[in-house]
Image (tube, rainbow, N blue to C red; front, side, top):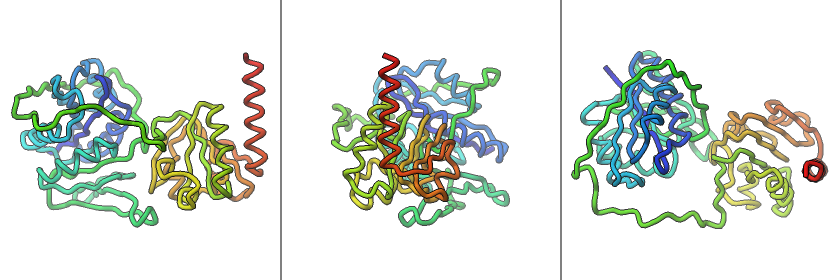
Amino acid sequence: MSFVWTVAEHAHGELKAVSFELLARGRKLADKLGTPLAAVVIGDQVSEARMRELIERGADKVYSVQDPRLAHFVCESYARILSTLIKTYRPDIILAAATSSGRTLMPYVAVKARAGLTADCTELDIEAETGNLLQTRPAIGGNIMATIKTPNHRPQMATVRPKSSKPLPKDTSRHGEIITIPVDDGMIDTRVSVLGYRKDAADFVNLEEADIVVAGGKGMKKAEHFSLLNNLAQTLGGVVGASREAVDRGWIGYPHQIGLSGKTISPKLYIGAGISGSIQHLAGIKTSEVIVSVNNDPDANLHKIADFAIVGDAFQVLPELQRQLKLRKGRAE
């Protein structure tokens, strides 16, 4: 029997949201194949209750590999463990998040397993005739979508964009098995140790985790006008994003880019100003809970998917929106 696996991520013993997003993807694939779905947890002090939540959100099994030496992500040690599990249990498909750790770990493991890997997937499916994994990702700078297969080698491996799907709701009636894998010294690569972490880049922005994103596009006309977006984002407690057009014109840095060639986001509120709504950009925001579009073109694509479409000049609408928010805040105080 084949197996579908997902690789969970954690921080300080708490599972990250992307762990549950991956299970939603994996559950769909496992159901199509008629096979069990398992989550792999490599870390330290991840509680049984949190691992039980993996089962409640779609997993049939959880492989738990925990040790104080695994509290922090170290690619070499994590790869040794995942490679050992692959040899022992022989999964057919392994999914991980296209995060900094997932993008580091999976290529390393793929080489060890002599397997194929498709990075940064936005869609996954099963080919009906063969049971092969169909892995779709942007190519040629996001201008086309390529579907890739690795029919001759197992496991089939893919990393998936965070926020490109929503977790399944909890089902407390689900039952599954938590399997504890003992850690021996040979699994730990002592050549590498974590000395600390740095997140002090001047243009660092955590778009994927933001609840509110205010984004600008070509319609903002020049870099200086992004101050309107910064002010609004600050008032709302959000962050600033951008379309590829705005980034390509040098108005804002690449870490702010949203879309197939940038980041995929799923905030509670997305406001797009001066963004027409290319297919590439829409793919990066489609799971947002509430979408607000501000554009003077009534036929803008972003208007068509927006919950609230404002047909108007962004340079008039944004300051007025900012003014109204400050008035409301003043009344509340």
